[in-house]
Length: 119
Image 1 (cartoon, rainbow, N blue to C red):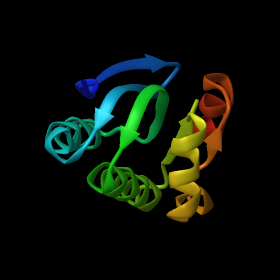
Image 2 (cartoon, rainbow, N blue to C red):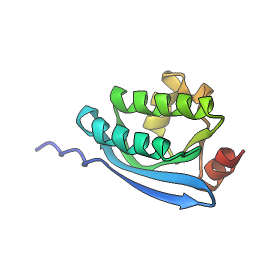
Image 3 (cartoon, rainbow, N blue to C red):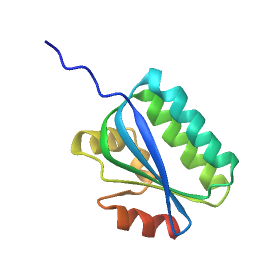
């Protein structure tokens, strides 16, 4: 019997002016709409420094990658920052293969990502 993918969720917290979005589960196309709305809400509220903590993320599809990329571009336009942390190896490979590692810092720890987001 095949394993059912984990449902996607995100938890939003704050650490000294940086929004920390902890991603969990399977960020596939059906989950992407809700994630995009959450991220857009943060941007609409003026978020400028964001960390995506991926320690609990098991999968990201092309729709999720698009949201991460458009978020990074919007934050750069605002002179803000986005950083990723705690990517498991297969997800880090996806970000590297897509070339996103050139514009979004991918760090091993939340502390490192917070420092990068703060500048």
